[in-house]
Figure (cartoon, one colour):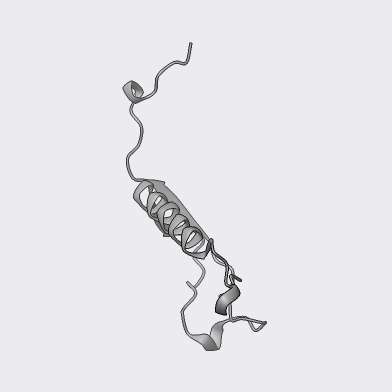
Length: 79
């Protein structure tokens, strides 16, 4: 989406760096777990992916668990 060649987007490196920072901050805060349904988990096998312009996996559920739950003393009243 950024283009290529001499007219490439000048913000490409900034956008990629920003996405990396956001993703790492998210991964530090949350643990990603399988969903609560007992259905078969999707695989990375391309034979089980949905066809389209690009291959994409079938929809699936995930749960997010806060890695460091807040304690009462961490929460401050804003008065």
